[in-house]
Image 1: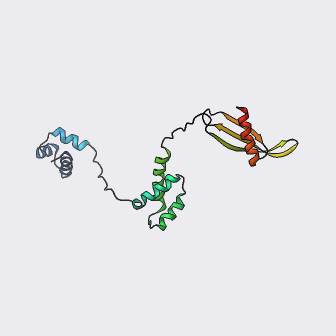
Image 2 (image 1 turned 180 degrees about the vertical axis):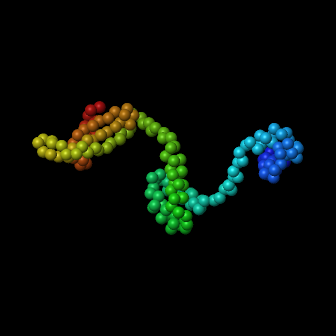
Image 3 (image 1 turned 90 degrees about the vertical axis):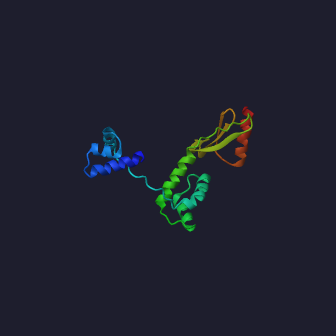
Length: 175
């Protein structure tokens, strides 16, 4: 008889009114062992594992969230309903949160480049400013070099393609 069964039997015998010494004699253990058994809190029974309504959709959900971890839960819920999902959105939201946590917390590897191979370019709007006596929108052309991380900023009043190309040329002339 294993330890768990003896403890269960000891609890049953105690509930029937038997003394610790009698229980120990009947189970073939010491009084102290029975006292220790009975002091321990009884453990709750393990619940049997049930399948989830989402099990058959697991692969589909994972693919969608790997493509975009911030996919809207309501839209995904509608897609799953069309595929035969019969559960509630709350189950889906909990499941999406677990998958998102796994996907988002994975480490990001820094991307390194050789000198002169890559730069990142963006525009930033600075609202309306007075330029040459006129109120105009002011933009900043920002370029960050991939290798050195040096930043180049040039202010313009337009984001047209010819201005964009001129800013690139100006950056090359600064090197």
